[in-house]
Length: 351
Ligand SMILES: *Cc1c(COP(=O)(O)O)cnc(C)c1O
Image (cartoon, rainbow, N blue to C red; front, side):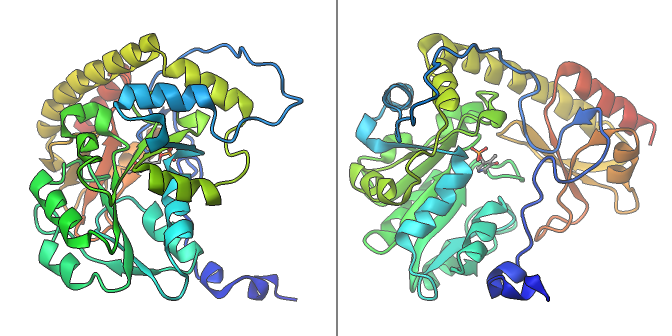
C-alpha cells in the first residue's frame, strides 16, 4: 500500500523547509540559520509543571508590549514567528479561494505555510534592488488577504523602503493585511514600522526572540497588530502554544536587564559585521558583498567558484541561496563569533 497517496495532494507535492539542522553536514562552524553565536544562561524559576500553562502568559505579553512600546492588547505570543506566519493564513484565508502575496527572493516559510494549507500564492518578485514592485503587487490584489513583506529581508539583507510600505498599506486598506516580518529588526532598530500601528489598521508586525535575543532554541515569537486582529488570532492559536519553561525564560529575557543585554549583543554583532564585510570583500573568490541590515551577509561568489562546498568540506556550514529567484551564485553567511568569522575568512583565503 502506498501510504504517500493517502496524504493530501498539496502535502504530497510539498517541499519542506530546509531547517537549520535538517541540512546535514558535520560542521564545527554553523553559520546557516542566523542564530546568535553565544548561548545566554537562564535558570528555570517555575516548577509547577503538573499544571497547564497560560495560553498567553501575562508576564511575557506585558514585558514584550513594554519593550515594543505598544499595549498588551496589541501583542500575541506564539511558538516562534513561524507559527504566527501560519496562524495569519489560518485566520484570514479561505482555502481554495483567498491568496497571499510574497516577494522573492525572501524567507521560505510564507510559501511553505501557504502550500501546507492549500492557500493560493501569488509570487511577485522584487525589483533589481530587492525593493517591492508596487505596480505588480497592486495589480494582483484580487482575492489577496495577506501580503508578506520581510524587512530587513532574509536573505538579501536590505530594508524595504518605508514609502513603499506606506503605499502598500494604503492600497490594501480594507482588503488585505500587510505583514511586515521584522525578525531581524533589532540589528537595525531605527527601521521598525512599529510606530505606524495606530495609523494603519491593516498593519501586522512579526517579531521573534530567535535572532537578536539569542533564543532560537526557545521557540518564541510575537505578533503586533490592532487589538481586533490579535483577538482573531487568539481564536485559532493552540490552547497551550508555549510550554511553561518557555514562558518562564521568555519573561526573564524581556526584563529591563534582558533587553539591555540584547541591545549590547546587537551592537557588538553589528560592529563585527562591519569588519567581516570588509574582510569578505578582500577575498578573491567573492564578486560582491551586499550590505546587510540583519545578522547575516549575502555574498555573490565568482561563477566558477564552488565556495559552498569548499567551506562545507572544512566543517563550515553556510546557506546556499543560489536556487532562489535572482540569486545565482549567492551564499548567505550568518555573523558568528569573532573566532568563527576569522575561520571563514581564513578558509576563503585558501580557496
Ligand atoms: C528566523 C526567521 C523567522 C522565524 O523566527 P522564529 O521565531 O524562530 O520562528 C521568521 N522570519 C524570518 C524572516 C526569519 O529569518
